[in-house]
Image (cartoon, rainbow, N blue to C red; front, side, top):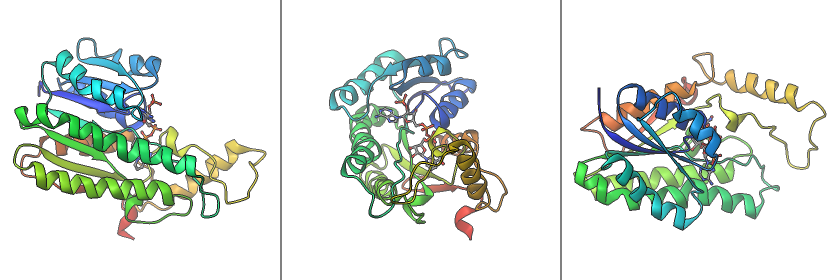
Amino acid sequence: MSGKRYLVTGASRGIGAAVVDALARRGDRVMAFGRDEAALRAVAQPHRKKVWVAVGDLRHARARDRLVGKAVDALGGLDGLVQCAGVVRYEGVGGIGEDALREQLDVNLVGPLMLAQSAVEPLSESRGAIVNVTSTLAARPAPGTAAYAATKAAMVAWTKTFAAELAPRVRVNAVAPGVVDTQMIRQVRLAPGEAMPEDPVTRIADQLEALRGLHPLGRLGDPRDVAEAVLYLLDAQWVTGSVLTVDGGLTAC
Ligand SMILES: NC(=O)c1ccc[n+]([C@@H]2O[C@H](COP(=O)([O-])OP(=O)(O)OC[C@H]3O[C@@H](n4cnc5c(N)ncnc54)[C@H](OP(=O)(O)O)[C@@H]3O)[C@@H](O)[C@H]2O)c1
């Protein structure tokens, strides 16, 4: 039993939901944040009196400003912040839209950095930790992901700067997953100018198969693979400013 107190963003599904589940199972208390209240309640439901729900949009300063206080009040303090909220818009060069670029900047960069800053005070009191979920795409390019990759590379940069500035009070690390089988990757990736295929289900299945083939360990990631790495970084007392790659060998080749 760990018995610690965590705020997890992007908790309504995918990697964030797996992190909430793993923390609650080992006896921690968690504030789960996202926009989809019904999905958050479904994540919390198996963990009565362990998981609280906070609904809001990470792009909105007022929602972010209230969130840390809400978590501290509900949990009685804060030992860690895990930032899983994220969005990707697959757009190739020539088709990158400014609205999509700004949305990815807001959700993947501005929101997490500002939220981390709000959490410094309670985390300093507890000698706590921040874990940010970035991506192997921050360092290894893939077509159609220039804007997303830029936001995740920026996240790696501020993770290391926060780590240097906040040591020894707060540890700050990141996890860089390869391709993980969540809703995020189950969208059609169109080439610039390409029309939506008549059979998007088959197209997505083909995409997943091609992505699977990039991973030497022979499968896509499971959200629990990433949750395991997040829990390690929350606990690892002599690790800060690190990016832990969890990618089935993707970046080894
Ligand atoms: N799946 C992959 O292959 C992969 C690989 C590398 C890195 N990652 C990163 O891992 C993290 C989790 O991704 P995932 O695969 O679990 O994706 P996902 O299933 O699409 O989940 C994304 C989460 O982000 C939340 N979110 C999105 N926009 C938000 C906003 N404006 N305000 C608040 N919450 C918002 C969503 O919640 P609501 O819809 O309820 O708001 C959802 O809980 C992301 O940062 C992603 O970039 C994923």
